[in-house]
Image 1 (cartoon, rainbow, N blue to C red):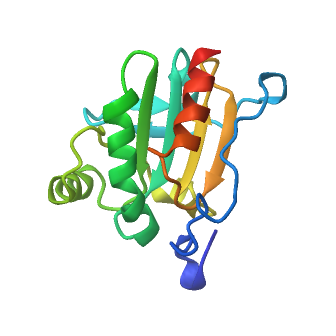
Image 2: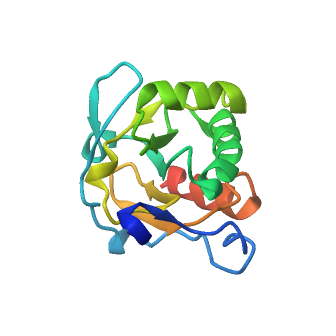
Length: 168
């Protein structure tokens, strides 16, 4: 969502949506659809896309270092990747920082983020992004769940939802 001055806006960290009653439950497989595809870059500078993530369950998180709720959520996403990351699951945190890879690498280092890979995208490609936004994709690349705001990614509800999608 565009905020005042044409800048990307973000959701406020209070109340925390994962605590305030918004459910984190996957859509049934028969109702899932492919997301709108978008491009991003990995740490090696290789181009990637959502459509190229098929084959495992993926939690895509759009975020930025200047976004307080995004920053607050990153340690939990890092812990989720450490706990479940592997051939069946991956967290793909895509930074929308204008400074690209260098900004994200410095921020990851200062914040102690050790399990997430650096992914970046051009923020101009997301003029209406509400940050943070997360998209849980099933193995077929379809949207199993999507939401904006801070979520407790290592909490029981999130882990149950993710592992249920992984078991499909």
